[in-house]
Image (cartoon, rainbow, N blue to C red; front, side, top):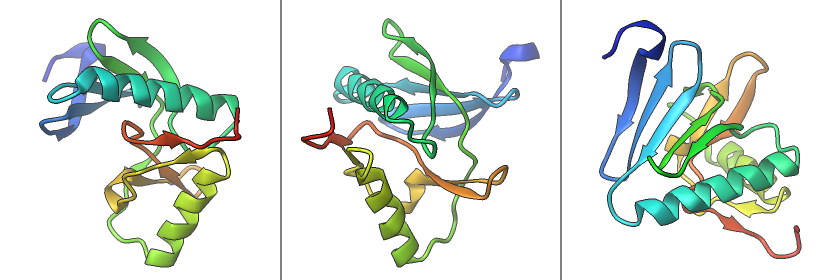
Length: 134
């Protein structure tokens, strides 16, 4: 880990992405592996779309670096360890009211933001924009 303001804590390192959180609370996601460019492009598109729709329970894009296939977003809390099936279904259904189907509905993509007691949804690289929400 580097020193100073660039120091980060690694949250995830898989074949598809590396996710780190900076000590000032930003999330840095770098895409790699199969279809990295397409997944990067999809996540940027979906997050911009959701920001335009004022969806308040997803990360907000702070920086996009296409040359590095890297995004920096706001932090949406800590990963959820337990979530009942009904609450999970409600959360992803609420996301669809903003015009996005997640397409990777898994508890690993749900966080809890303690500041406002809100469950949030992250990781939109496989999401679908629903027709009729332009």
